Length: 236
Ligand code: UDP
Image 1 (tube, rainbow, N blue to C red):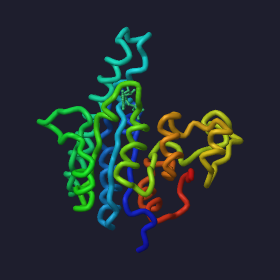
Image 2: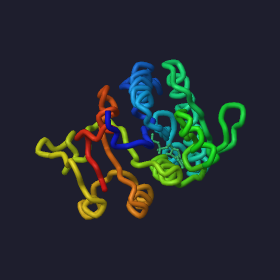
Image 3: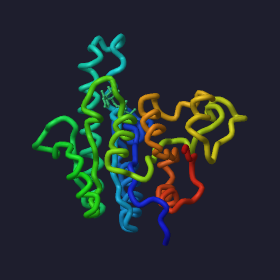
Image 4: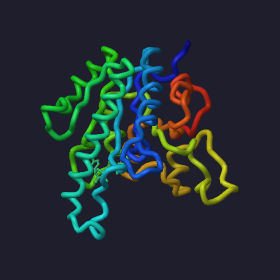
């Protein structure tokens, strides 16, 4: 079986871990993700993961919470660690070796982020989960995903979402919206398509890191992406 991508960075939003209920996690969704990730590691794909924290906390809403932005951002980064630990537990349960690395030191639960160590884990077939975002307030986990992907020389960043790609307009609001199979970085900017926040997007563009936006909630999609099948939208 031929693989298009040998080393990937998979970025999942925190919200993707929860269903419509008030609970931060839906164990069934996390298990499906873990099984899909196992499927591609079994083929020899090296997988790094960045997980968001939006299902638990986002720092942005200072006016609503009364918690100052930078402080709230650190809370958001800690939220990504909770998600990382949940994903780690499920991956290990389905038989995948993992390491969790944190951009904020918390040595009882995670290794500190060390680039060369992360790359060594990947070479040994371990899934590396990067938690705590970039470790800095005023950034997002999309930026952490782009940054780590570039650092570890991933072939591609895969942004797993609930929609199956990038559309001409919001498909939930505009029924005439159509999906792009491929789009350039420049077109995304000109058309004001919000694939990621600008910091994250610019990092990818400047470092020629391809982005694939795809529906992670459809079992098997991740496998199709790494095999190079036409799933989602490729930005390059
Ligand atoms: N965050 C941060 N720095 C980072 C990454 C995340 O301050 O490098 C904080 C920020 O408050 C953000 C929250 O963590 O709102 C959760 O991350 P994000 O919103 O990116 O998660 P997602 O939307 O992917 O669930």
